[in-house]
Image (tube, rainbow, N blue to C red; front, side, top):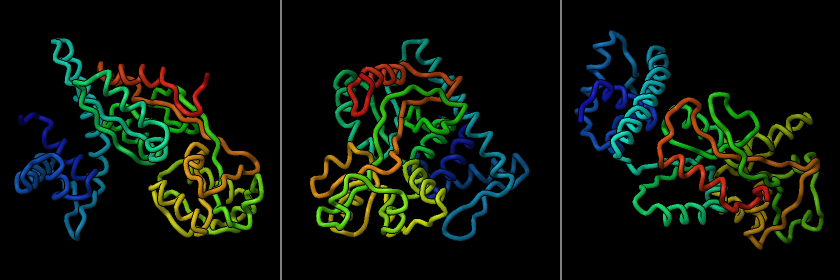
Length: 297
């Protein structure tokens, strides 16, 4: 159904997906109709929002300004629609949750499955990404709730603590450092590192610790696939840093504490002041009561 904010929705999706084709596929709209809607929007506003040259569209200065307002408006519209539907008893039964890749793999599978069993009519969509990216997605209204790191969490989010776990360095069993119980940051900086990509809080934490000592990290591999990082470490390809809960799932590596010790606290967050649907409220309550690795007892 066409609404006054349909063109704005199209615009935001094009920016998020990086192009017209991917956006058209994601929202199931014919690409010519999508292109026409954006041209009409630009004509109505009297400005160009997107640069269309090359393989990927980019934002113009006017487009960047419009994007910030469009995301805020669409977030409020989505909340208003949910509230009106729930006032009529028309619960949408849809929930979009964003999780950091490591926690999605090692802490949340059982929780998500149990939540679905308790709420079988609910449609649950799970995204993964870095904690900083997830914060932006929550603030923009693109996801209902997400799991983020506590340190530096945005002021426009509501945060509730869930767990705390240690960041450890993982080496192959035959690695020269495997016999140690801990590893200094200075020693870590001398080794080839297997790290998460940009946008991941744990990566930023490790690199900041190295740079604070005037050293430079030797990054050999970047990936958001935790099994890949652990496998590469187990084969002697370098040292990876992961949460202890992940390290203990891989018997081919030896986890070493860092000196000084590094811990990450994570919690569930949602946008402050935004309408939280019944489904989202149910999920928050369920997760806060769940037995997660590293959760307070």
